[in-house]
Image 1 (spheres, rainbow, N blue to C red):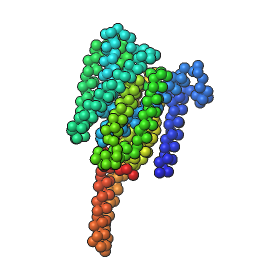
Image 2: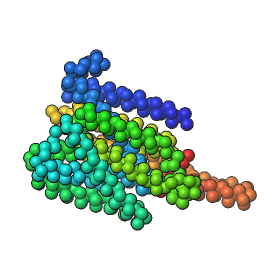
Image 3: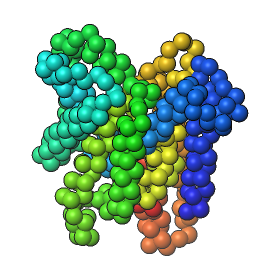
Image 4: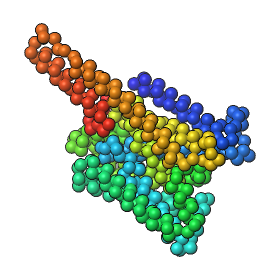
Length: 381
């Protein structure tokens, strides 16, 4: 596994480089001397530092949440945005703003301690409710494609209710929630950043300590129970961790999509294994790198205002992920053609021929399964 360690060190170096570039580049560029001086009176540098830290933490959390969801539902199309989790969290936040407006409570102050915890609690409740509905449906209906349909229905239903709530909101609250829905890494203060850091750090450590149980869980419920894994406890832990990650990032940064869906796939094709011991750190590092790239593009836009993060993640991530997976699929299809063209020598014994034919069929089947966009077999190499 030395190449994996070497690649992870390389990803760490890339993240450090992107972090420094996000401090230097922007609508007003800075010199390296200004960046490394870290002057407390340099307001622009302080804002960029907060934005870069928020992007790193949020990207790591969203990517990890996507990895856990895909493993929990055994569905590689699962993600916080696809399954409607971020939409449910957004709905609860809109309801909180609407209720506070009719009660005469001002909730738009981002420097208020009560605001942070109320919004975080409401977003977490929404994420837990959505995950509970999805998990209940997944236990009743084993067809995984139906789960995605339910997730999209939840997202559409929540989106309709959010639009109705927008009509009833006041001008200030409507502007606040509209900008929040666009997604941004620039609105977090030190308290919110600290909350995000603690949640992502504790969740990452907790998940990594259970990587062996997640590996066994991929083999099926009966096999996992036979090996002593408490399936219900593992699922409860995964649901709580995923809800906290998705809801906290949604509450403070807005409903940011795509990262939780695509980054685990890219991590898998880099690691070439479903072993969570390596998938977890790679997913976190790739999520940080992708979010920092989106943050840099948002800062150095040709316009006088920052571009919304949601637009950048979709425009930048979708083509990259498509080309990346397509390239791997073409390589695997080429391997399939080579395996199919292999001729077995005629001078072998019948038992050897049967063995080689079976191995040839097995290799061909594995290449076909992995080359498909949505594979079903998982390896633990």
